[in-house]
Length: 458
Image (cartoon, rainbow, N blue to C red; front, side, top):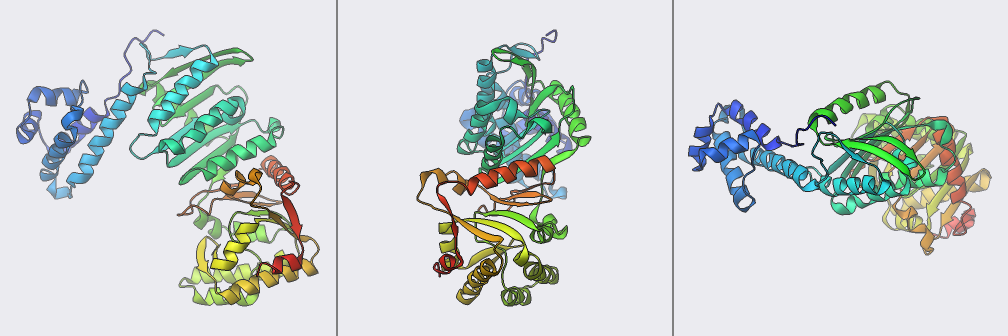
């Protein structure tokens, strides 16, 4: 630790300088416009000081109005400029309030308690950032190697105001099938817990240092971890974090993809869902109305009603897949009892990530068609989870899970807009989720429906 520069953030000063350059203004012109002392303006620009909290909003809106008036030719908006300046202030205060930066650009912890104390303070403050987003990039499997304590910290983020969560991490695949239930629970809870979650996992390489970068400005490296012994260094120094961001990019860009975020639109374009329903073996947990095996007459009616030719073509392809492949496949379909009842009552269903409101007749035709399939294809089984059992409460938050022989897909359709969609074609990830699903249907609160029992819901 030879660098003795105090760790600081000067986002507000940087934003001021950028705006002054764009507007062609000097410090004295700003001071005259807002009727403020030029010494204070200089301190704000240099990052030595922030506008006082007592009248910060007034000062910033006055500055924004000055910039907007001098940038009319580019259509500058005072409200947008003010929001940028306020966000820059929040980021600067974040560094001051964290109280985790040391005297040097690199600081050191030698206990797990101190390590997690650092992270808890960091996450508590990071949720107050401008867009309520937390981004984590780790060169190792943080869920496995940091364990329950780190996962508990992640679970606190939504209640602290975090709306969007992004995590990139590396994973040593040969070791991963040991804790498959814990691993699946962690991933499913993360995907379910945010308005938007993006998780990307790549295969780890040997001798990669254990590095974590949070929101691009906080860096930590675990130096040693064994039983009770622990050592790590960390920094909020922008230059240090920038260096390790570059290292992180190289790690992720050159690694084999294990699990990745995908937009629903891209999934439809690449026929992933059509391929899944065509598969000879499927395990499906729908935490929503079961958007599968709709009869041909219902599919044709929906296709005719579509305003998009691409979508109507997609529905007609799906109609053929349902009748030719899904109807004859080996399928385990798992639903909450309340999901069936809610679907029958409302007719609301998402098909190909497009919401539909089916008529009472269309819903009845759908349920009867599934029942007919169960009678003719003994490999098509429907399982129901009882809603009254407390053990099911955690599952109710989970995204839907679709597993076939080629891929596992997680879809959080209960959140709107539907953006939490993840897919993996990695064989070991598929096996992990297969075991997880098979354990779900063995639960004491889960039972298999007969065709007649399914029809009784109508």
